[in-house]
Image (cartoon, rainbow, N blue to C red; front, side, top):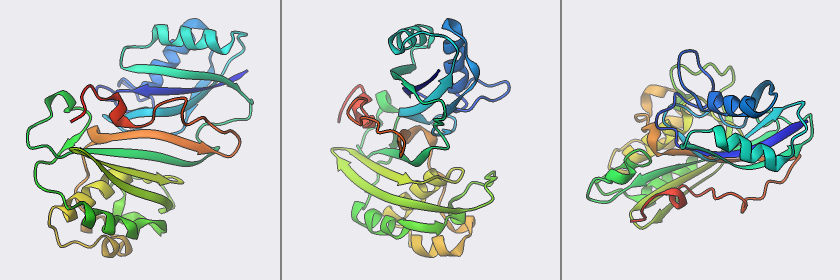
Length: 263
């Protein structure tokens, strides 16, 4: 039997989602919890490989088991063995040929920027604080140049091992809610640190840099892009599949809904 799960996590103290030698990962914690109540066949699959310090409101994973427990028993049991900064909100039985990563047709991220004049001490692990004025209209105008299928070499980290830098950015939306600016991105896939380099570049432009993001894009030169934005403001917020229709209302995806305060 194969089960699909949806989880949320605070990535502040983890090395990332993927299991790594001599480091604490989200994958390790989930696999340990599953194995504590039943038989886990192999390793879990997952939709998005988030980096150290990155969070998730809607990470999708799946696992194979020979145990006959129902979905409610798995849900209750897994959560009883997870630390307080990881929660599984949904477990459903799925077809044996489903794969959270390879069946995903797109993945979505949100980056949260806080623009208040005082340091957001209660949100310090979940937002990027920028006290200087951000020109959101310039940010939106520049971001629109990235939509479509492009070579995103200018926005890949130095340790990126992808052989093909071509990606399709389906949408990028920038919204303001009070003192928060949220950048929502959806793409078929991402290069290593691609989202954070895009955000860092947009921020520099919105703060007055004379860089042009389209010129940076076509240059295919990482040195021409801006700094990599910090991990702590980034959230994995979901994936879309052809084979299954996940109920978007069944789990809250908006990062702000998880914050202890709204300013």
